[in-house]
Every structure is written in structure tokens, then in C-alpha cells.
Image 1: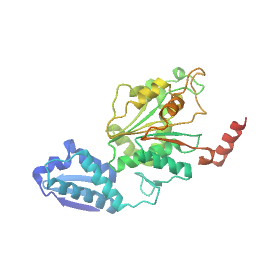
Image 2: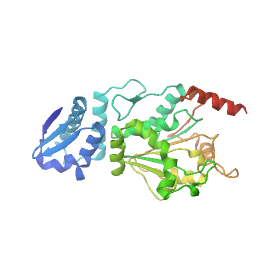
Image 3: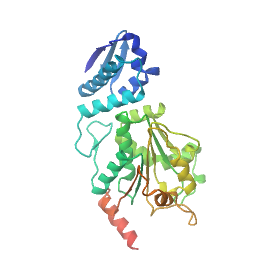
Image 4: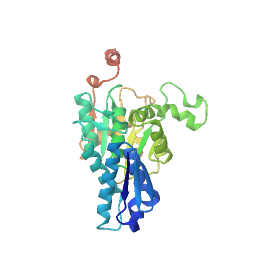
Length: 309
């Protein structure tokens, strides 16, 4: 479908489009449409329902510019969120991601509590055994927040700790060495959006997947930041990560305290954080159990067998 919108105030085109067309890119990436500006018109192309959502956002933005001479990222994000909500009412509990017709939904009561905690708190810890959807649901929540304009970028971090193997003996340069540790995050990400979109977001620095060590010295504003496999952080690393939280950002920390790969004498930063931060307002702590395992039915039996021994 093609739709042409006439700009009400051509002299405010820069304010409407944003610096370097930033606001247009937000709309394009959220709804998967093409936007082409010619003279005093803006042409929107794409699937019918997505074009309608984009047009609704632009109408709200132009209405705002009737009263003022500028728009903020928050203004555009709010308009995008309203359009996404009005046009695409989701079933209760579903997480709306980029892949069309693919909404992620929690499958157990524990997962439902986890999803609610992520959206209600600026910092959420989730611990539980393998297969409970800790990472998958966190990445889904991040994709949903990005799609609705509630954050500007996603940062996915993971400690590069060996599980019985030596990192130094892996072939290749540093990037090649750390990629295997980040693979689970990429796998979840590709379930939320198509390959080309992931690639475009990474090139534009909208999505960043990095080893935890690369977080030092940064402040992350308007971001959703996920720390995966957090049981393999030290207390000092965990403190370093948590203090990266900037304005209008959310953090999600996931891990399995039964799978710590640190030296035996080293205390886990995740265990340490759970003890120190429990009860602080604005911090959600969710503990998933074996009954929340949603992988192959054998995974639950395997976890049970190992715990018995």
C-alpha cells in the first residue's frame, strides 16, 4: 500500500523528521515501512496496517508541531506507542515483537510474573534453571520496548567465562573468540526480528551485543540493557554493570545459580546482588523453578535427575 501525506508546515520539516532523519528511522524500523520525502509530501509504502500506524504517528507529530517548534525523542516514542496500542490490541500477557504474526507469550505462572516484573521495574533479576525462558523473554521484552519507542537502543551483555574450556585456545581474533559466548543472545534476537532488520539495527548501533568487560566506563541512557549468564560475574563486575544504568533505561539480569563456572573460591556476583538488593523499591526479583521449564520435555527430567544426585 502507498500513502502520501502532505506536510502541514514545510518550514518545520527538520523538526518533524529529526536530525539526520532520526524520527523517520524510528517510524520505519518500528513498522517496517518505507518513507520517501519529496517537496512538501511524505510517501509511506508497506503493508496496509503498518502504513496506517505510521500515518497515525505522523499525524500526532504534526499536531504537536502546531503548538511548538520542536519534537523530542519522547514525543515520537509516545506517538509510536499509542499507534501500536490502538492498531494492534494484543491478547493479555502477549509481548509484541517485530516478526509479523509472532507474539511471545509467557507459558507458565512464573514466566507471567517475570514479564510483569520486567515492565513494572527499572531493574529486574530473574534466576532459574535452564530452559525456563529467562533470556528469551528478556530479549522479547527488549524488542517490544524498542518497537513501541520506549527505548532507543538494546544492549545485550554476557560474561565471557569458560565452562570447562579455555578461551585462549579458541582460534581467531578477539571477536571470533567471544562470538560463541554471545550466540544465545543472537539466537533469541533472530526469533524477534528478521535477519536484515537485526543487521541494520546493529550497523546503526540500535542493537549492541557485547562481552560484559566492554561495559566499563559507560552510561547508558534511554536503553534496555540485558545481562545474561550473570551467575558468572564477580561482585565487582556486577557492581560495575549495575552502575551503567542511565536516565530512562531499564536493566534485566538473568542467570542460573546452579551453573556457576567461576573458580570455587570466587563468590558469584549474582548471588551477592540478590542478597544485597532484595527488598529495594523499583527492583524486581523473580525466581523461576523446574515447573517453568518450557524446552523439550526431557530437559525438565534431566534437571530433576541432576538435582537428585
